[in-house]
Image 1 (cartoon, helix red, strand yellow):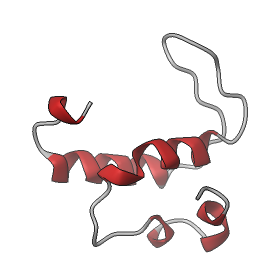
Image 2 (spheres, helix red, strand yellow; image 1 turned 60 degrees about the vertical axis):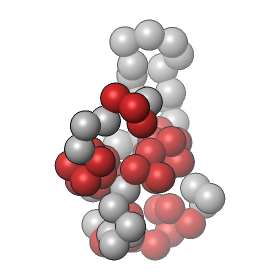
Image 3 (cartoon, rainbow, N blue to C red; image 1 turned 90 degrees about the vertical axis):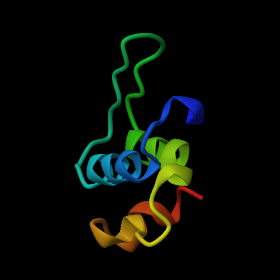
Length: 69
């Protein structure tokens, strides 16, 4: 997936914007629907793409990501 990202900084900003949304369910165009814990799973999948200077706690409470690892 990294090889398809043309601008890592812009991609990281997009990930941060999505993490600012309040969601729990993820529905993808293929595979299973994630009925719960979607926010945490999204964070875990994309945290490496986030800008190093920004932490998810900027827009979310500390407890939101504490359990995400």
